[in-house]
Image (cartoon, rainbow over all chains, first blue to last red; front, side, top):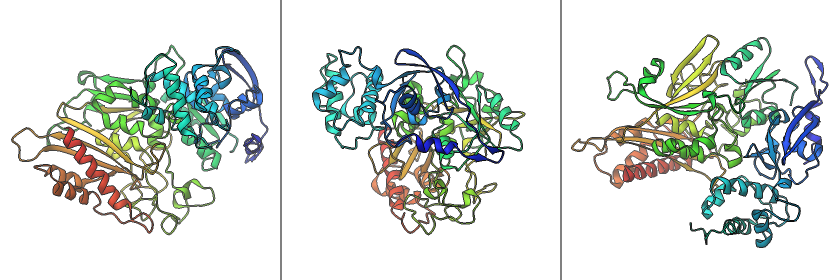
Length: 185
Length: 365
């Protein structure tokens, strides 16, 4: 679960001798703030966010793109940050769960709906679920329940609390002033 | 993961130059990186140089990351000569085509208006792959070129034929997800769902080589170990140092239809147990049969996307849609199947998805 194992993969020797790790200066914009950090070039964006920037809201589940706990928005697209090498993130704009709420005092409507509907259980999947829901609502503002299920298909909930998560996303649409009810458009 | 040099390029020419510059050493091309990162982590690939083909930055345009309609009048001769003939024996006719750049993502394909309207099999296949997170990053060329997902191939612990060993561990092992056709050398199934759809749509692949570009029908691109020119260590005819640049897909006439179906264990985010794409062209009314052209390709059943030729022939003979005829077509879809100890279920499953596809496309056509 930690980055320790990841780093150790790099501390290998090659046919040309011991490999020393050069670091890179990674420039990217995170939650609206221009950021520079010095990282290993094949560090994952997930590591950069959690270890270098201390934005620990983004979680690591599987580390291989299957669980969605590490989902963030990269240039507006929902991606698994565990599959994005730091070099690939150079110059990009990243939104993490820490950048979703409009202010410290106000939650985003999706976050509020998760609170209201009990959509967050143990909480590990919640940041990824909320970013996946936001990505879905951006491209499909009034999803049916089937579209919600498909839009969140890349996010696993280990508490298996999917029903309340789907209800939360439906509630978030209603909070938008729409009349979505029971999955009907 | 081994140490390697990261080289960024934004054109296919640069990518080819960088791949060949690695002469004597190994180089690997990465686009979305979904499959490549997995392979690097598992140690299946250990390149000295990783050639990263990136979308150009905002402002500069590249056909590699675009979907565009190319009118027949502007279609290069190199593509026109590979288009299907209107009727058997005719010369290929220029047709309007859709050109899809190699770096176009699966998410873009699944939501593109022209593809949704005119090439539904492709939109459906792209949408059925993986998750929103993966589709936002995974490219169409990467989907076609990803290596098989056989668990023996993917594990560094098994030195199978695909890795230069002398054994296929699936043949006597855990083979419930493996091939039922052409499976005696290597029983891994081809992993690309998009390929299944692109094959029924007569797609043409354009490839950048060291000396220029070459084009070939996608139907001649994938090759299994048992076929002429086949090599168990590869799944296609892309030569080392070559790079896919575009796909050209002829846009269908009003009497043509296509669709794609996928059978899987989970509702979403699953590899297919069996998948099928079908395209048909209605016969003029008064003809003896319902269809004048039909193409059926089945995935998840063979080391390459599997053309069900016997089922196509049976479908072309169809004069009316009834259960007996559909059953005969479905039976023909599994002609030549030789299942392994644990994947016998794929024979009736293959028949079932083909029957469903035939009924669905004929009732909608």
